[in-house]
Image (cartoon, rainbow, N blue to C red; front, top):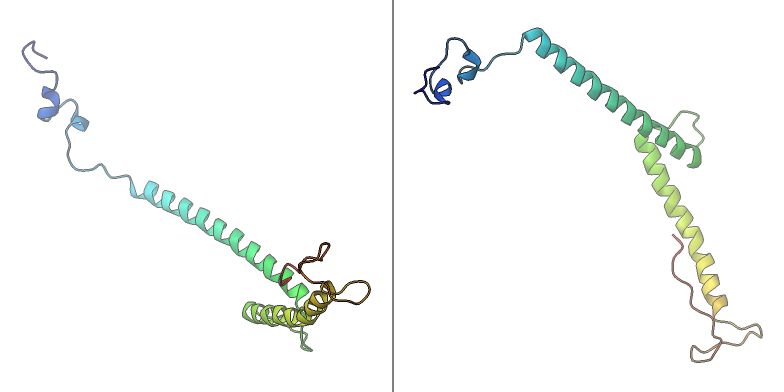
Length: 132
């Protein structure tokens, strides 16, 4: 390098000794290496998806074990399992409503069977609300 040349002169024009310093066409990664990287990413994504689906299937099996099953001995599909769970929850909620009403009525009575007024000291608190 001559003493009068700028330090950045090698970046301004292509240099025969250092072609990588000149911005030119992108250096392509060999096709085999690119394909290998894509394959690794795809295999990793497939493994993550298999793990996710396994967890989902385990959750459905647990749900099937607590939902009452009809006379049929076949395994319920995922959609049928969700529908049965919804019906089961609604049925349990309906069964609990009369019990909640009984508790509310009992909370308003004293041991003597007389009604407590809310202004009296020692009045029992109202139930907190639905259990479900």
